[in-house]
Amino acid sequence: NELELYINDKNPPEAFNGFRRKLEALTSVTGNYFVNLVRALENGLSVVLSNQKEVTPSKEKEGSKRRRKGKKNSNRRR
Image (cartoon, rainbow, N blue to C red; front, top):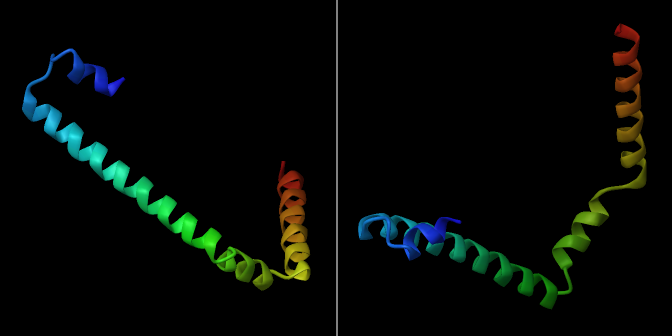
């Protein structure tokens, strides 16, 4: 555990400052993620719903056919 190094006071205070900055950055990123998630939930996940409408079933089937063809071709080469 990274925090234990600083609890036991084995490292100089300057080293702890680097850890503190790293922790602050990670906390900020996590905070921003949850703020955006809450906004999306409050808006009825309109972004997610609009992305689902862009993908049509025919495109999904074509993509799966391509993947299967690729697998067949790779088996023939062996």
